[in-house]
Amino acid sequence: MSSTKQSHQEWFAEKVPADWIDAPPEVTVDADEIVVVLPVPADTEIRAFRAATKADRMEIATDGQHLFGRTVSWGVKRADTVSLFTHLAIPAMTRLRQPERRVLDTLVAGGVARSRSEALSWCVKRVGASETIWLEELREALQAVDQVRREGPAAAGPA
Image (cartoon, rainbow, N blue to C red; front, side, top):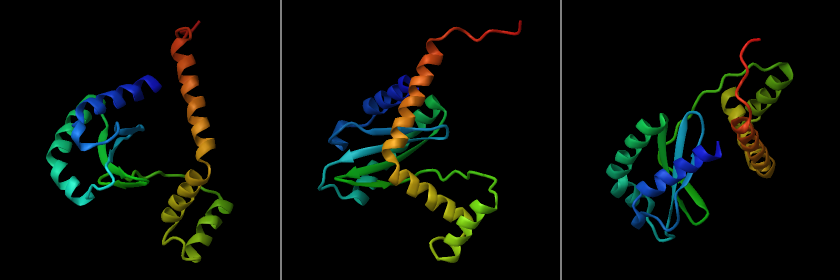
């Protein structure tokens, strides 16, 4: 997993013009999408940057989509603020028992969200924000498991 992510990182670092950014692009990959966040100087006007780079970003995205088989989405990071230009919102279906549905319904009734779907998204964002260290440790552990699997013996066939 980490070697694949590394290759995505390297590929986009080579493709993005150096005069657009003041640090290497931040590349995040999942099963559906590659999000490329371009760290830009603090004085960059984001709307103008987005318009000026659109054709080139679209060309890079098209090449990346063909190479990696995933949608490529873009954003910028200016100081501590990230602005995503385009990105996917993938539906995630789940089955919830009554106690979990009651949590979502309470959030809807309280005006925190307009629907169960929005309430579930709110919950996921809260966990992501409050448990960043734990989630990063879990991701690192999963990378270690992937590495062990790659280095282990080939899967045995039926006896």
